[in-house]
Length: 422
Image (cartoon, rainbow, N blue to C red; front, side, top):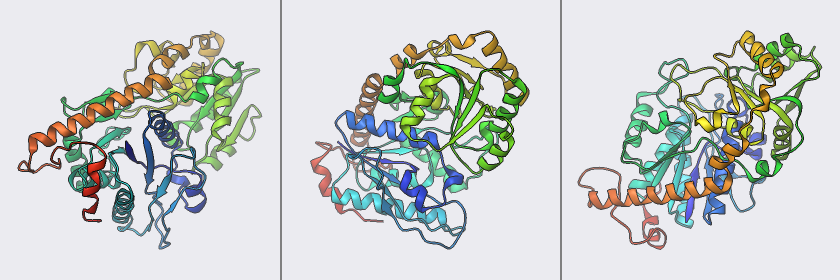
């Protein structure tokens, strides 16, 4: 199948050409790459689409382009243009991302669309695919669209919330990182709990020699608990141990200043995938001091799966119920204050709790082979659900976005490629 994977992906080229570091998500980029690679390993042709949105208002126009530094030479990445004018930016992202997606569909029709989260540009493309192009669109749900960490409602417009709710009721399939997110779609819809994917590179690195190293990997935003982690590390004064921090973000300069007097804290900045795998494989402990959420399960840190797969012991704040076999390698801390992080680090290191790991267990669930099989089964069930709904709806008399049933998923899409372009 030809699959359009529509995500807020941010590859190396867009980082060089657009000021997006403030909205940079390392976890999103990594997980998108791993899932796209799984789809390729299952024999599918995959194209990535991203709005590469610039969130800082300006009058500068950023033309669309294709990624030159591909993570896989067989997976092209296309960015739509961006025009970050206040009250224009969002509309422009929807308009140009849909136009870009449709132009690629006209060149060679897609059989399936996967969208990452419920951002309006992604929903716009998905609804257009189902309604006008007669192509099923499934959801990869990573962050709750209706709740923030503190329990409040996110600052989205009524139109965005309504679009998200409408799409959740019509989506033919949903994969998500937590049961809480999966519960937001109808019970009849095929579902897949996909907390993460273990890359073959990380699987191969498992078994590397561990050192007295604690690793934090991720974007540098305050909600990830980095300032408290740095303060806690200094207070803990752990002899012969080092703290390694990768990633960058809008708070990086302040974090570096906070740690400048401690030689056991090492900042690596943005690292290559190979270097990150090496760091994870050599770390005895990996830590995720994320802000706790009032409603457990509205987010789940994908890196917890990677941390566990590397053979490290994981210290994390709670992120909703997790499979018991994976919890063998986890120590939970109730919050991410400096005092809590400090006491937890001492407890894990002094008591040698880091000897508890769950690499085999997580590989059994989210290893590349099992993940590929689960993903393929989920896709086929979602397509069948779309076609079942289409057959039930017939000639659109119910007013939904489904199409009439199709004989095949591929060749007969060519006739639909002449649909309206915008």
